[in-house]
Image 1 (cartoon, rainbow, N blue to C red):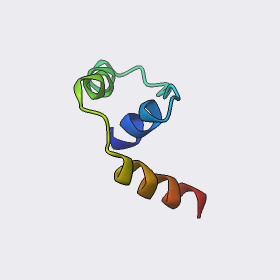
Image 2 (cartoon, rainbow, N blue to C red):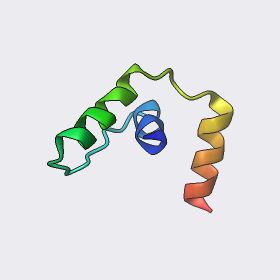
Image 3 (cartoon, rainbow, N blue to C red):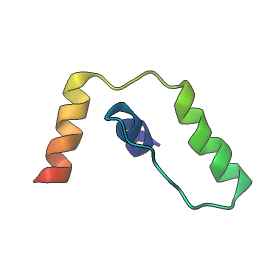
Amino acid sequence: QIFFRFLMDIGLTPLTGTTDKKHMKEDLQVLQWPSLDNDSIAKLKKLIHD
């Protein structure tokens, strides 16, 4: 879910492909989370790009 929040914060729409209702609900709960702070976003971007 952290990665989903990250993707939304950088303007992308995450796709799960799940058909499990429990997983769908868990994924949608991310919409209620606060956005990640700039430092967290920068650290995640560094992990992905390095």
